[in-house]
Every structure is written in structure tokens, then in C-alpha cells.
Length: 303
Image (tube, rainbow, N blue to C red; front, side):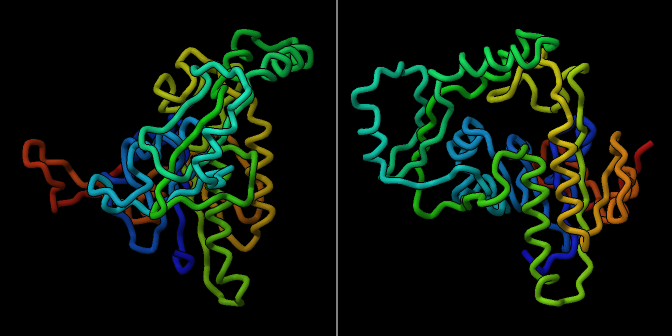
């Protein structure tokens, strides 16, 4: 994968609602990187998840294992993914009065597992601190976001899965984590002195704001905030993106239909049509009732 010249990093902002990877053919030298619930709609070469609940959902779906439903999926990158003997999970709660509603176990039981989560006993204190520091915010919305994914998530794992632990970055958004990992992958040739031009295309990184509704095509679905939630302060997202652009000056980045304009020598802004041309994206029309993807193809144009 490190020999690929182009990467397409796909966020879940509403600006990319037109694009589902499995519905398109593209140049063979493109590696697709997706985040979180994109797996529900399509396989990608690399799937990145940093939220505990989403990681367990993905694992329970079978996507992390060899599965005929996803014959072309690649690998998964999960954060805080440390495998331990499952017996530890059974012993660690002895002496603790943790309500079962806060303990989330995956469907299948094996002899190994990953334990992650957010301590419910400390959440209220953190909420109160956040309210004191941000008195201008909507308190109900703030509480809703901070209470997301409360509890302990025990995911039982198979020995032959395709999950790789993320070593860096940690604590970033899923989209920017995927962006950084794509650049790490693209840097091997550069560090070895190979003069290989690398390009990273960024789609669906909408960078919404707190004053607007939540911008995510999966909002209101399992393991996401409700559709009524407000957006997030874009400062952290913006700073993480800028850190990536600065760290990898040898990579050329293309932001697709981005509302945030970034002025750097290695960053350009392009349209959907320009993305389709650069990656040779061709939509495959679906023949309803036949159960297969048509061999005829057409070039997609956007107005």
C-alpha cells in the first residue's frame, strides 16, 4: 500500500453524500481511507475508528474478519486497542458495583478481548467543570455530547482479524486521524529517498460550527449524536488539519469543496468534478433486479 501514489481520505460530512466508494470505479493507484460508519454503506481500503461504541459496532458486524459480505475490504485502524486475556474482563469487576447498563459486551465470546470506555463515575464532575468553563454554551447540548459513550466496552476479538492499533495520533478526531495515517503510509518512499509524488485528496471534511446543526451524514443513527444536536467548535479540527499539512510538506493535499480555505503551499482547493477527473472516478449504474453491478460506465458530472 505504501507504493500507491494517491490517497482519498473520506470524512462523513454532508458535502460527500454523493460519494459511496462501492458505487465508483477509480484509478488503481488510489487508496481509500474511510471513517466510522462508512462501512455500513461500502468497503474501503482502510477503515479508521476512534470511538469505543463504533469500534465495537464495526467488530460485531464482521467487517474486521474475512467476510464474503465485504470481499474487498482492507484493514482497520482502531485507537486504544490493546488485546488482553478475556479472563481479566471477568475478574476486573469483582468488588465493583457497576450497573450492567454501563457494561457493553460484543456479541461473540473468545479468549481475548479489548477493554475501553469512559468512567461513568467521573463524567458528572467533568460536565460541571465544562459548564463553569463554557457558560455561553447550550447546557443540554453540552451534557448530551459529554455523556456519549459512557461506560465500559468489552470487545471480544479473533486472532485472525485485520485490526491494527493506532500508535499516533491519539485523541484526534477520526477524520484527522485517518488523514495523518494516510500521510504516514505515503511517507515511506520519501524517507527512503525515492522521488515519488504523493497526493492526498480530502473529501467530506466539512468543519461545521457550534452555531449550526450537526454536520454528519450518519447523525441520528446508532452510536452517533441525534440529528437535533448542534455542531462542534471547529478549532480542534482545524488545528489538527494544519498540523498534518505542516508535518508532511512533501505531500500535496487537495481539499474537495471545502468551506474552510487554507493557505499553504502544499494545499489546494478543488471541486467535485476536478476530483472525479484526478482520480478517474466513474460511477457504475446499478441494474435493479439483476443483482450485479453493470459493466457499462459513465463519467459523473456535477453542477
